Image (cartoon, rainbow, N blue to C red; front, side, top):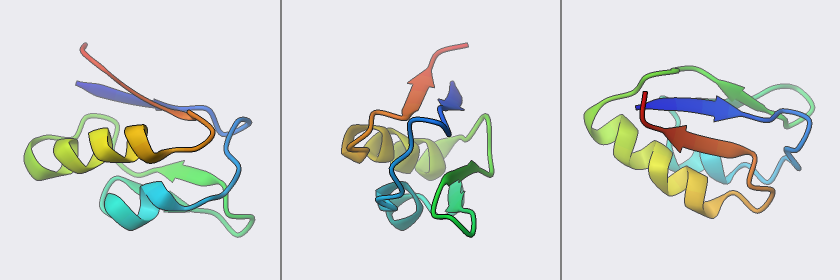
Length: 64
């Protein structure tokens, strides 16, 4: 699995960083920062939840 983020679409809601802090963070402007591009196990589960919760649909978890 892989993760892509659209930083230009991010609205800074922060749900990703709250539910998957080992995968996502936010910069000083609140915009998503990707910490892991290929998470596994619990981090992948959390990243998938973050994808569902993102109000801007700025996160995509895909099979590679």
